[in-house]
Length: 383
Image (tube, rainbow, N blue to C red; front, side, top):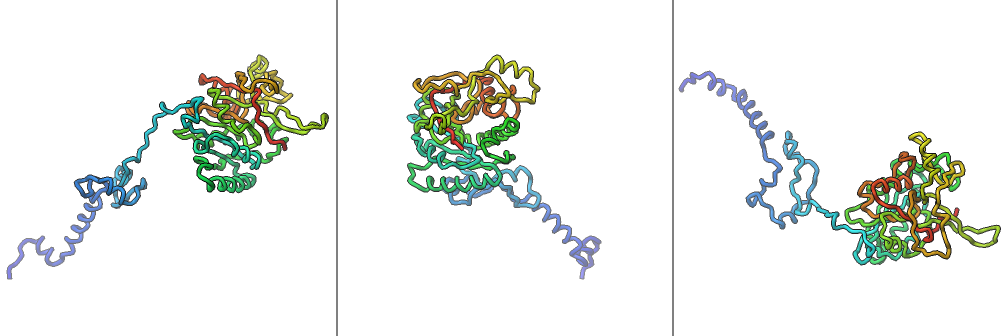
């Protein structure tokens, strides 16, 4: 029997584990570090995947694929399988907002912040004659017990419509919950108290912005802001406002009530946020601190602004227009590009204005015009 003179070989023969153990660890580490990658080029068919192969594979996922213990970061971000159309391209230069909206199949997004559900509002909404396949709806409700009630009613109403005949269904409906606090009392006298207007309007602005930024799509041509308190309007509301072809246009908001002095039903102005700026208003603003706001319709702040609510003429032309500097949110139609260009609802004092009136100011600062229709009425719920 030959004698192994090499000491290393004698060591391997006596204790093979002393060298095989470290060698195994080295091989395992090499596999973990440089093993098979997630690159789709490693697939069969010379690295090419046919459309048929894509269709029969599992659905792709953007979650990291950790095949190896020490996978490199770049490969984690590359999904195994991507369909051919996984990237969408939108040419917004071809998106139009025209007076021939129905003919051009232009989509309208109706947005309604909702603190209470009114059957009259919903019934009036369903009476609108603009094609429903071109209408998307968006709602935002408060994150409180009142919001829970609204959500229950809203879900029932939506289910009845969206499970009905296809031609009666809306294109899309979105419901959001506010992520900010809302005022506790939604009673009319409480929510219109002057002392809480800055807090209330700021909260409303945040809700409007959340709703707008979440629901505005690359297909939206028009945005109709319709308060959830509007219980009566012409059935052709959308077409009528679109026909004016204005960047921003507001209807005049009134309220039906029983006039005790005349012992009969009558109407009265409700929304005083549609106005034209006055010298007195500018003077008041110039003497305010940066964090102060002007709210219209209160005797405490006499701006003497011309209010659209006072320009209503029962015998006048419903298509009469007037230029505005401030608007309310009862029924306002906005070309979607105005919002895309940056016009939003400031939840902070913007030139001493906030929410919808701040939106009008921001719109004008962007170079757009704002209009109102003094003889075109929509009606607010009477509590």
